[in-house]
Length: 149
Image (cartoon, rainbow, N blue to C red; front, side, top):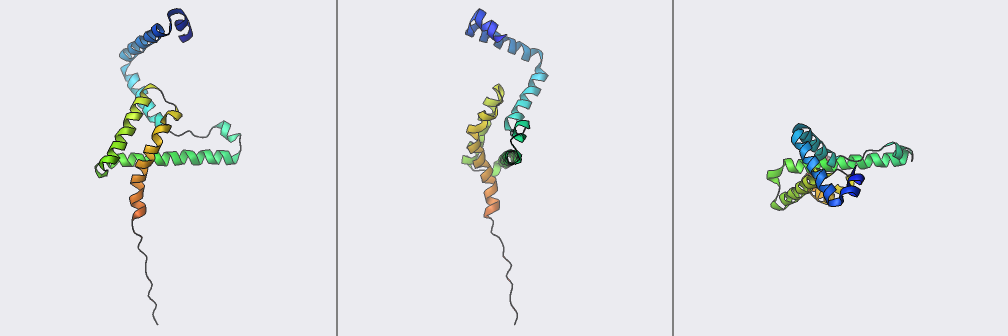
């Protein structure tokens, strides 16, 4: 349909017409539109799970792909925990979280492709680290054993 419209009307008119059709669809199907938007926002953060193509490359590749997916979920969960601990975050950390949220909303509103989240992943890692580091830095109490003679 796009190619026919573009050939017949030109790219600008075809784009405008598709925009009008999209707005009309949103107005007539608001509940479906909201549901799709929420789904796209969630899909933005889902990892790429191994598929049949990965399994055809052998067990090692499949295991590495699963490790990558688990690592990604851990980073997203720790980033979510940083959001949940909003009041504990510094102003700089809050700015990072706001930047991530803006990036997410802009990109997830239009399309969902895993490569489009790559630019924001370093910021998400910083946020995840801000949650993890206080746990790692806690002093470990070492029990001392006294020798009795």
